Image (cartoon, rainbow over the protein chains, first blue to last red):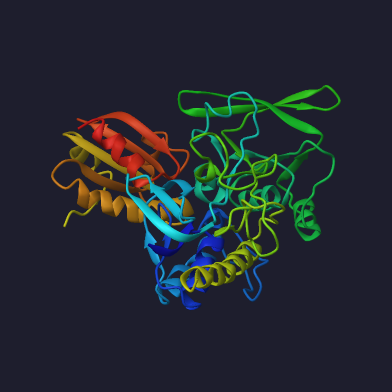
Length: 314
Length: 105
């Protein structure tokens, strides 16, 4: 029986692992199907993590985190979790993709979110062959070429700036006439010569041939349209929460979720199910920031310690 | 202990021409590539003697990446007797990669 099972190894899961183990829980496992680090490892730069000055990539930011947690006894199981359910005794059953089942007194779900697709024609068919959601991964394949970025939030703008250093030109396609990103980022966009703004515009269709994308048709609110002859389209239009592990066989959820599937928690990261906590991007009103996810992980861990102590001393 | 092979333009054809080979196209700056790196290492041990597990650093071996039309990494391709029989784009779990290899053994 595990004291605590942590599902997911991003900033929330790692911090939950650090706090639960350092706080005295003995048997804590963090399930992460690959190397821990999470979604932020795909970000080209992070300039808002407190205490970290200068330009640092998401990958470099996360590099020391696992070692710090493991030092206090956190165990990493490199396997995906398919389901979490509750036993009649009020403990939790962790079903793993390798078929094994573990049991835990408490669970902290930190499964995060996945970049959304924008939903234009050809996007799914050409995903990975010119359509991408990771500029640091794939920008290199478009060195000296023209690309489009879809979106108007912080991520879209930051990644457009990153791509503008590699690519000859970046078309920034946004459905509104203004951006909802940090003012400093917007200013940098405006001052970058090789970024062309296509505002009040939505991607209509991406098309290509056997080798991948060759162009993107964009339509404007005023009825016009334009064909961009580009080999690369980067999509940053928000995220869907990864809540599949909480879905039960009968179609219900292990705890309350809202209409978008985000897990409802209180300020202590407690869900509606005792012993089950949620932290990071998958909870309601998540600010989707590394520092917030880490904070959630710590909060959830402190609550989990209290919960486990009460259970063990009952 | 099984170990994956690092492929170059000089060794690529020779390596994939016989049997089943998993080739992971990656680059050092790619976060999701780093995430699956330990999974690839485990696969190399698990499939020792049954399938070849290989990696191509697309930064150093750009000709191979171009030849196979790699536009997104990680891309994992399964070769059987020299032919591409399957491919996956993006990070995935160990089980997902195992299934892809086993389907062609």
